[in-house]
Length: 225
Ligand SMILES: Cc1cc2nc3c(=O)[nH]c(=O)nc-3n(C[C@H](O)[C@H](O)[C@H](O)COP(=O)(O)O)c2cc1C
Image (cartoon, rainbow, N blue to C red; front, side, top):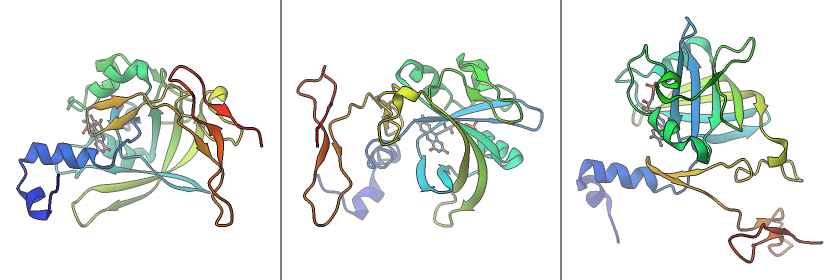
């Protein structure tokens, strides 16, 4: 299939959105927890999370234009704080439901049954069921001239995750924390590790440090040096 600019432009609106929303491939799924000045909680699923830098530890989200009421964006602007909670396979139904446009005075926690967890001194709620939970401080907001979306850059000030999900290099293995991957706005996948690669160097060929598992049921094997 080949689509040029005119073909993309002429696509039926919903089909174009479905295609362009999914064309980046797999994305993370996180629940963004916020609260207003009175402490009323809000929760919204987002897939635009991107790594900006490790030192300081910065992550960014893209928010849709605020031409309609955007509760999460308003709360982040108000308190400067929010939480990111990884969606895992056991909370997909509830996580997805947080995308529904509930009125401002309805908490998506109450509406979906997900449990709030508050940490003393931090003005945004975590999702108790999540295995990976990050407390974020707003650092920068940029409205993108090209389409009115908002780039929200935040710093991780506190991170909680299962120790068993950290590999020997210190990286988080999302599959070990039952993490899922998203395509588009509606398709949830269970990702599995295929292989891990050593740091690439011009003078060395690609080197596998973890070999592909022989069958879908077996665990990846770490290679001996
Ligand atoms: C799978 C999925 C991913 C989404 N990702 C984003 C996103 O990255 N940015 C965004 O602004 N909205 C995203 N949305 C839409 C929000 O979840 C939705 O607008 C929600 O109602 C916002 O809630 P709020 O008004 O309480 O902030 C996504 C929805 C779904 C179903």
